[in-house]
Length: 163
Image (tube, rainbow, N blue to C red; front, top):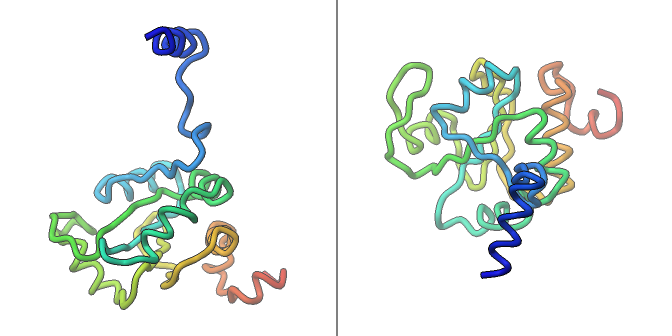
């Protein structure tokens, strides 16, 4: 009880910690709100397409999406969305009713996990279908956020500093 009271007193005095201060926290935005937020904030959209049975999807959550550099890059340049590729829950995509399952087919997702990168207009500008360790994920995110992909610079050239 004393600990709870002391904790409450500290929170009231110093304020509650922000999301940025919490290690391992990606701010996932609901699908239908994500593109509105991206347009308003002038950010790219990052969609983590996963399935419940996918081991590498779970590893992304347990390792990559808890890495501070990945979280920082996502928070700075992207609106992040998690989308169950097998869900039949209703979504709105470009003014039409759809589902995660339908988008998975429409976006030609063939394996999991698949990360889809879109601009704020909802145009797909890239994708990556595999598990990505934190270092690789940061490189993928900065490749997109730098505009190199949209300038038609290959990922290899970007990594070599040619982009």
